[in-house]
Amino acid sequence: MRAPIHNKDKLMTRIPRGARLMLCAGLALGGAGQTAQAVDHSFSSGFKFQERDGQALYQGICQGCHMPQAQGAAGAGAYPALAGNPRLASKIYPAFMVVNGRKAMPSFAGMLDDDQIAAVANYVRSHFGNQYTDPVTAAEVKALRPSKPAASE
Image (cartoon, rainbow, N blue to C red; front, side):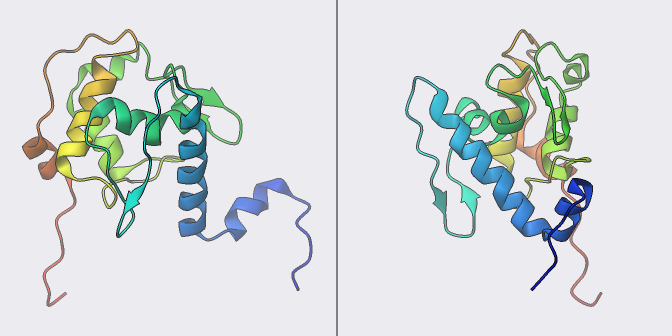
């Protein structure tokens, strides 16, 4: 039996990364029930999100950390505001972040296909006070994915 953890900073390092990701996804899905519209947040096999449009993806995944109005949050981590975020002027930026993750944000590359990533990136870039109209495409998202190592490696 493990000794109790008295230092909250060490708590997250003792929880396996996969469990932390599932916890974050569970929190995101639970927070989505606050919207007026009912959204089905069920997973398909292999833990891939079924939602196809940007709004449903944002509500099912992103708003758990970035908040329903994309105002961002601070607490256990720092989650930047997406509302009025000048970094979104680059259409590649949000797609890159979803594919690769950064700091407290995990990569969603294994849970979303290229069309889904493009849809959520385009949704964020055209909502919450953002008015960027040059859409990112699924082909551009595909180019952001890390190349797979050769079978011999």
